[in-house]
Image (spheres, one colour):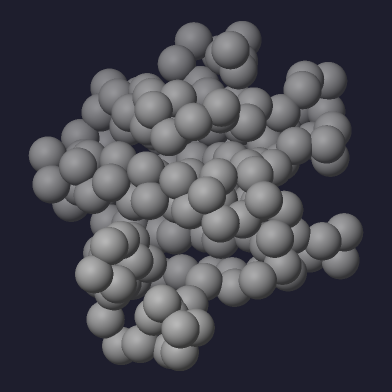
Length: 164
């Protein structure tokens, strides 16, 4: 399930583009011969992130803090769940590591950017009474968030989180 030939390296990519990335702590290469990995649910995505973070812990750098691991898994759950619930389905997934941060990338089929609304569709500053707290939580934990609307449709959200 997405394991590269390089031991602990992790392969990820965007569904349908025929291009993947092999990812290990601070290392990326292109791999055009493998199908991209798109998790079926949040649990499968969390397992991918956990495996990448374990690989980082065994690499040359210092291991991610317990808090950083928990934050990365929480953000992964929120991003994937939102893509499945509100984004028309998950179309891409990735996890990239560098010495000080992890970047989690989620793509979905919807071109609508994240926002907070109440039951009447009005913008709100806080979450809904039932749900709606994921995006504010992601914004709170992230070092950086990048949103893009690719020409082929859908959206891609990249969230960079500190490892220490």
